[in-house]
Length: 261
Image 1 (cartoon, rainbow, N blue to C red):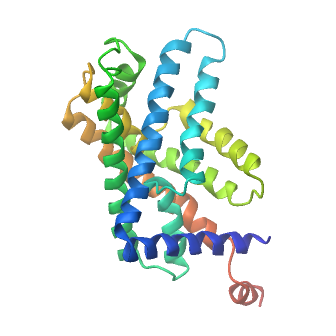
Image 2 (cartoon, rainbow, N blue to C red):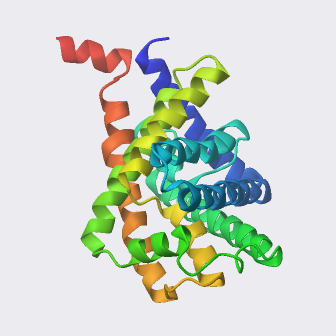
């Protein structure tokens, strides 16, 4: 399949997401909520692994690879993740199948749905007594504290890097015909941002929700500080570093012909 066909596939996906939101908003909201739930339950297991494996060789490699499970679940269940939608909707808007006003509306709904999903799972974990059982020096709490105590500019640029990598994983998965290949690609590429310590706003929603419910030291204002800059960075990473170049580098046949004249 030519690269141009993958652009069209991404644009059609963006359009279909918008149509679902417009025609069946409750179903779209549920898909967004589920994405937040899937990522947060994976995230909790990730932080448990980080805490338990930090002293063993290759422990960080193992946990970084595991984190990709969250995106794999989201992709294979057709759930709606805000960060990957920055790529899909920017491509569909550049291609003229959606517009930027509609894109901003969908991003907002999706982000709020992801937030609700993160809060639901955090509440379930709290009800199960699992959050309260974490010691105050647990990796989740120290990780959350590290995230919120960074300068806004650092969080912003780490947010760009995080979603550039996440959207790159999704973009590469579009080329894969077999499910096993998609799984391997997403796990390997996602591990880049996890291992490097970049800032993913939706993953942070889960981390901060659990920390605030448990014995973490962060405050609501500190969490919002991180989420503001990581979300803005994620948008730039998905749109400017992946979505727009993806469409621009693979022009339509008529555009390609005009460029060759």
